[in-house]
Length: 88
Image 1 (cartoon, helix red, strand yellow):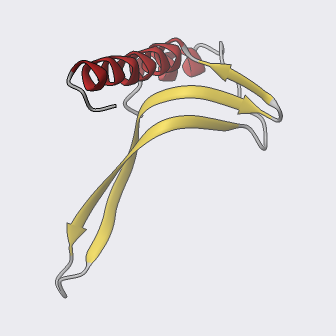
Image 2: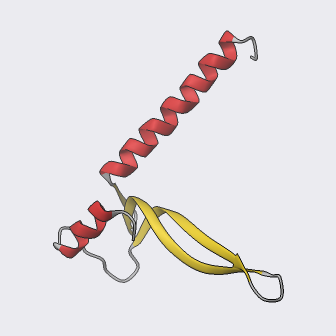
């Protein structure tokens, strides 16, 4: 797991998991080409945990909130630039 802050919270017991709990995350998939030339998955890692999902309850992490804010800001800026350049 690449999200050290979230991993540390789990190790300290601040975040617990039960059967059926899920995380919303950024998943990196490493691929390589095997001897026959086919692409195969060589590994997976979580770089950022955005939220923990327990049934219907979604608890967004601090990194998740920041990423959502950054994405919304980027979309807003792109719209502004598009309108300013006459691309409406």
